[in-house]
Image 1: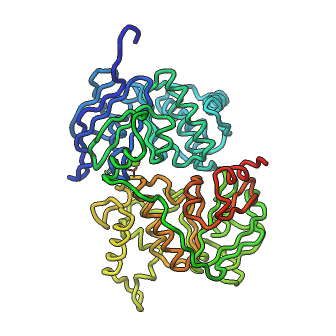
Image 2: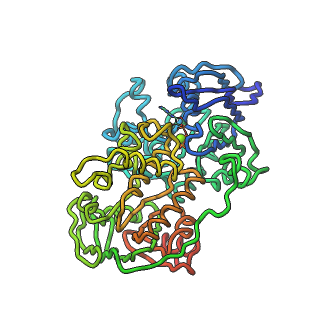
Image 3: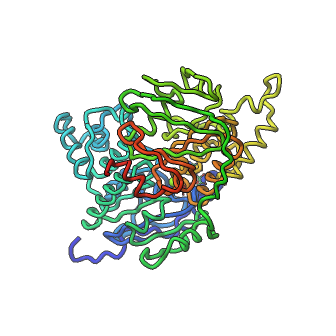
Length: 500
Ligand SMILES: Nc1ncnc2c1ncn2[C@@H]1O[C@H](COP(=O)(O)OP(=O)(O)OP(=O)(O)O)[C@@H](O)[C@H]1O
Ligand SMILES: [Mg+2]
């Protein structure tokens, strides 16, 4: 609007929201100017997603006011917010798995019937949007065949298929690798220069310092302060989020290494894994690094029999095993916390308690196979406390928890079982800084109890902080093995991208 000087593109004033009598947002204020990248931070369950769903019309507020371009608006549903130029990329994916990439990108327009179904044109236009943000995905394939990183890119393309003046991203980087995050940031910078206001949610403090102009911190449903990023530091933000400061991010490792627990010899998985070997002893924590698509996830899925091995051998405690299914692997004491937890990790309608005890049903049944309910309650309460899972109690359905708290339930489920080998794909994805430390402590405890632990992570700092040694993969092969005294970002990256 030429001539008109807009102070705030978005203003949320005194927003409140309760779920079944429990307050999620109490009195929240947020202001962002045109062309501003505004970070929204806070612990798991602080109310970030709820606040953004109110702005996008997916949820209705109980109280408060919303202003867009300094004018009061009434957002009754998601159509109203789209009309106002608000685009959102939700924390939970909203794509339709059985539709193609192109159909998903233009889903909103197609469902409104405002676009002719010229499929070739649709495919080409979707490809253009995806190329513009720096990626290359076949837009004719079904979304269900894509990796989660690719699915996230389709979500971004979908949000950008309509003209937006406010773009909300709820933890977009949680499922992306470093190179993809870099490209995303370039896109956000372009949008910013066009005057688009961006609200960016992330648990990665380093990202906030890279791209955000201002940050609002939520604590228990209350907005604390709005800070200029240039005038603040990590410690200040952590303190506002957690209400305390943190000393050490990583617990000290004093590995007591025992005998070999798992040995993998020259395994192959459907063109993605090309001859990987590794060996983990009792008490050890090893890391697998590599870029998205390097074959890390496929390697562990192969070991766990979630994907079929097309070659190679696996030995557990010196004996050759032939897992036909993940259930087989579980029986032999192998546990795996998958990367894609929404689809593979939890049962959303079931309670936290049931989800946590699911993998360990035998541990809580007596000799005759009856469930000892007292035991079940006690164990799940312990884990809820340890991982600081934010919920009314252990009977709350997992579907009612915040994204990060759902992640913690999946971890709790496997930590609750005594596994010989535990494989964790991206242990702290979507988890706040305080809970990260708890997870590192639990990994340490599992190893101290004699488990062999395999961790995959896109965060190299995390691998260097918790592992005894690190394998770096590229193109389905192990390119290098790093001992503790060789740990640094450069060494990992060199093997990961293949530079000499
Ligand atoms: N549909 C729902 N039913 C009941 N409670 C809910 C629902 N959605 C959210 N909540 C509760 O509201 C609170 C805030 O959740 P929200 O998802 O906004 O947190 P968040 O800050 O986005 O956390 P995270 O970082 O884990 O994603 C939590 O206590 C959560 O359990
Ligand atoms: Mg959230």
